[in-house]
Amino acid sequence: MTPSFVYRRRVHFAETDQAGIVHFSGYFRYMEEAEHALWRDRGLQIAPPGGQIGYPRVSATCDFKAPLRFDEEFEVHVRVEAVGRRSIRYGFTLQRGDAILAVGAMTSVCVTYTPGQPPKSTELPPEVVSRLR
Amino acid sequence: MTPSFVYRRRVHFAETDQAGIVHFSGYFRYMEEAEHALWRDRGLQIAPPGGQIGYPRVSATCDFKAPLRFDEEFEVHVRVEAVGRRSIRYGFTLQRGDAILAVGAMTSVCVTYTPGQPPKSTELPPEVVSRLR
Amino acid sequence: MTPSFVYRRRVHFAETDQAGIVHFSGYFRYMEEAEHALWRDRGLQIAPPGGQIGYPRVSATCDFKAPLRFDEEFEVHVRVEAVGRRSIRYGFTLQRGDAILAVGAMTSVCVTYTPGQPPKSTELPPEVVSRLR
Amino acid sequence: MTPSFVYRRRVHFAETDQAGIVHFSGYFRYMEEAEHALWRDRGLQIAPPGGQIGYPRVSATCDFKAPLRFDEEFEVHVRVEAVGRRSIRYGFTLQRGDAILAVGAMTSVCVTYTPGQPPKSTELPPEVVSRLR
Image (cartoon, rainbow over all chains, first blue to last red; front, side, top):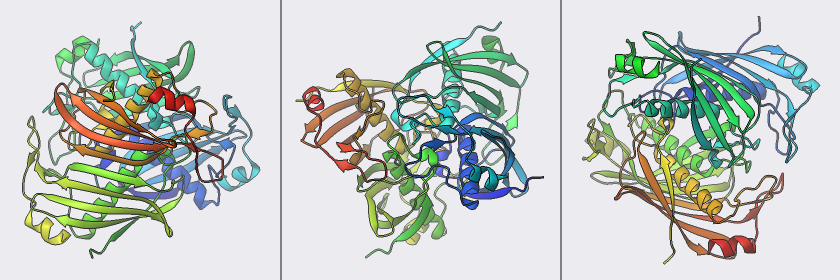
């Protein structure tokens, strides 16, 4: 059982769409914010200034259960579900009180960025592995 | 074999992030734009002015294969994979030339919006069913 | 001298662009978030559920002094500079510590929204006037 | 009289907010898209891959005259109003048919980006000056 980290957030007006609810693409941004808050909590920086390493997604998925509206407060529960040699898999649950709003998952890989070249897969730094596990 | 509709697009600067590539949440917006272009192509309006019916997502998923950069032109191939009584499932392939950038899927349900109440599932209008199938 | 309300925020990754800094359009969103935080602080709701009244901008302006980067924490100082019969003018200063990042202003008008019609200018509710002054 | 370049666009669903209209921050993105389309039209690249030069805004302003809604088509007329040694000033008019939706302006400066340092003001490349004037 991996413990989860809880990220708290309020819906901004610009995140709503004309249906009066948060646009579905916003849920993926919320999941990313929670991931980054988890890294900070573990004393890690996911994108340090001047860094050559990055963690792009190779997959992202979300099941939407209930709408979120302007000004509502909610929580993103993020769990590190697997840390491989080159990838990290996260699970997410968005909640408002006891109500489940969405359940999602994302897998990121570690890459090096070189200008003018495609991102190149590389192994996760040992410190990242030890602190996320 | 469902035929696919092709939506063409160019990457805007504001869609990139500090990794120099389109933020992953942008791929979901591109898929939605392609869905809406498909509806227009079939003579349908997905959100007519003053309408009480909407098509929120119940799931969205994407596998990311290659990055997209500022000013690049690409295509979203959208296929209607299933039209049920209350839901529509789409498949998407993002391509730049022959290169596959991403493969995704989304399922939307038909709902009625009433102010102050949760969205309520309803059957797809017959015209939507016949034109999307 | 109007006192200012201070809204605190951290930069999200998706708000950066490929220049490695927050996209300039994001500053306008930060200003709006600060405006809405001010309304909450005064016990007001700028967009209550089911409401017919809104406060669209008629003008927005920003002078950009210094860049903002991922994960940086900053403040938006918002001042109510004028409350007219039908409009509100705000002034904003974005700061990180003592460094001024941007100085902006926005003017909003009070309108009623009727489906299928253009927004119609109306007088500010008395409670809004008294609590913002 | 500077001639204007016309950029055509359609409103995407995700650009609307719960008031049923394009969020005001979106108008600034539309202006930027028009600026970049103008550069392409003149055979220029505003952000070539691997480039060290950028053109951040030092000011942006917009007066909003009429709302834009989902799926509407509109035009952004962009004019180069001044090309200085280190800066460029643009004027913008957003129109739908004959209706003026917004009038805006932006000033950008030429900078060099060095990792870990603040952007540094520099002179516009001669080719940019000659092609934009």
